[in-house]
Image (tube, rainbow, N blue to C red; front, top):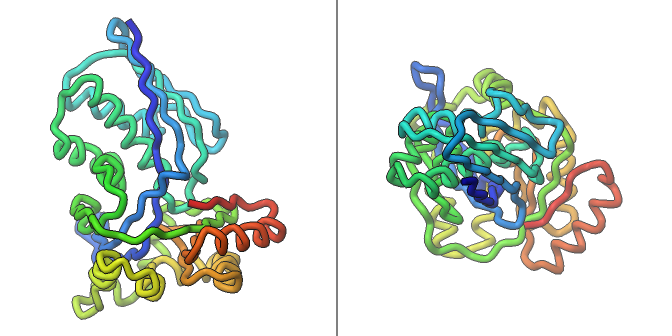
Length: 291
C-alpha cells in the first residue's frame, strides 16, 4: 500500500538578522525576525510504501543533489533513525525558491519532509520534531513550527511567534548568485568586529515591537542584516538591487539571510506591481517574485 503526501514548503525572509556570538562547536547564535512567504514555495511530494525500505529523491532543479547529501534525504534518514519506523519513501522536490539565496528553501523542504513523515507515522511530538530538525538545519525548526512571523534566537531553536503583524507586500529580487552559508560566515567573522559585543543594540527586539504594533513604517526603518555589508562588498550588485527597489517606491529594502536575494517592502500591491514591471525590464535574467 502506497500513500502520497503533498506539502507546500514556503520561503522566508529575515526582517532582521543579527549574529551575536560564536560557540565552541563552531555554530553561531543569532537574533532574528523571520517572515514566512506562502506565495513563494516549493512543493514536496512523499510516496510512502510500508512494505519497502530505502529513500530515493528526485527534483525539477539541476542545482541541488539527489543523493544522500540532499537535506531532504538527510531529514528522512534522521526521522527513521530517531523513531525506529521503517518504510520506503520516494521524495520529489518541485523547486520554485531560488537555491542558495538566503530564503530558506532547503530548510523549508526538509521541514516538509519531517512534517509529512510525522503526519503519517505520528511518532514524535511537535517539539521533539523541531529539535530533530535543528540537527539537520538551523532554520528547519522555524518551518516545522509553521507560524507566519517569529522572533528566532539561539541557534534557531528559540522561536517566539508574533501573533499580531501588519499586511506587507514584498518584492524579491535574486541576482542568480549562489552564496554558501559557510562562505558568508567566514566573511562575517573577518569584517563584523562587533559580533559578540554584549553592548550592541538588540535590533530584533525593536523589530518585534514594530511588528506587534503593526507599524509598517517602523518595520521598514528597523530592517537590519549583519551579512549585508559583507556580501555587498563581495557582490556590489546586491547594493545596486537594494537601491533600485528603494528608487521605485519600496519603504525599505534588505538582503535576506546570508544572501543573495534582496527584498523591498511596499505600501500597496499597486506600488509593488509597478516596481516589479520596471525591474523586470532591467533585470531580465534575474528571478523576481512578489509575496
